[in-house]
Image (cartoon, rainbow, N blue to C red; front, side):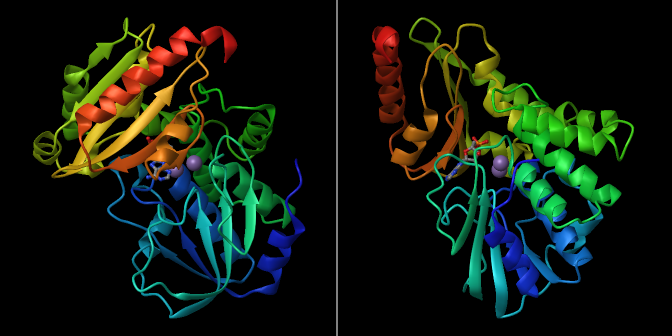
Length: 324
Ligand code: AMP
Ligand code: MN
Ligand code: MN
């Protein structure tokens, strides 16, 4: 197991009260990392609170620890930990913000600039990998829910181990999880295949909206506010909607535009080999962040201009493919 910075371990050992924060619209990695770390800290005798946006999407509503997500907060904590948040702006935070003696950032996004007093930043497949390593270094025994939490984090952020972010380290951690439990078949199905009726219909709307440009190398998917509302709101948009474009043979870049409020769009970008388009650079330009192959941002301007920019970008990459 790779090393964990001693600063992080000392910070945990030396402090007593912790508040755990994750990003807006928390995904499996955000929730899994928060629960594994939170329960791990509790096992070490620490006081832990969470401030996490609810309701969670259906597939993540099975952790009993999430009953604490809406508990009242203290005014002050020894440590406020930001998990899976590439920027501080992207975090879901209490208003007004609580006081923190130390802020800790634990994250795997390449675009993270390290906005904490202590930062544990490494490009792994999931933040849950970093959390697992912290708990391992502190000799915390994982209970069954923590095992599920770490699995949920890694499994969601790797698209069930299909994405290019999976490494030998990821599988080393997985093998440790399998030592604790026979299989993860039911959980995997829940995380990746099953949908409720509204989610399936919304997924269908997204497929229906698909347009292709530039010799079918750019995919553009749009979900209107009206459609999203019709099927229960943004919480019903499943992660795999952002991969619809990527699952079309020949597509190199895909933009999934979700109108989450009237005129406010959450944009998910994805890219795939052989093109070396780093979508996190595009997302950063618009105040977002993410990884080379998966990034996102919130957009309020003219969608036509955004589409034009992506078309020009892919044109450029196709022309200069050899020299990039
Ligand atoms: P998504 O397209 O929402 O699945 O996000 C893809 C990746 O980009 C995830 O790792 C997100 O954490 C990150 N991301 C998405 N939106 C933002 C944002 N507004 N700011 C920073 N990072 C983001
Ligand atoms: Mn996440
Ligand atoms: Mn993540």
